[in-house]
Image 1 (cartoon, helix red, strand yellow):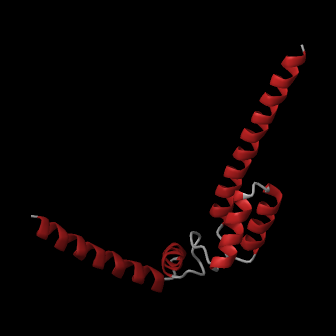
Image 2 (cartoon, helix red, strand yellow):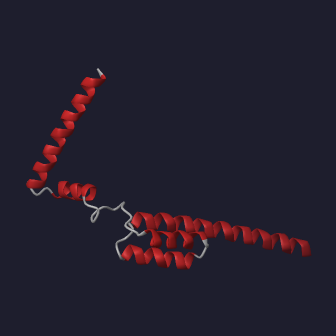
Length: 118
């Protein structure tokens, strides 16, 4: 039965690909976008096209806890088309949460220090 299911799946995949190609030929914009996003890195939203050196620079910026510099780097790479927006948004969210957590720790230390003087 597993063999039959596998054969059936392959048949449906072939049919789907054939229909997709037909839709592209018929100038169906959704089919065209789907094909390009999944088969051409130039149009993909989830591809990171950074050389190792630039990726290392971003990683070091994130680790250094310098949010302004990190966001500057991310924005530059986004504009250059080297990293997708979702990647920038994800890292920005992480950085923002980290800043809030650090601020809460500083605030707690201030309260503790002030309580010593009361």
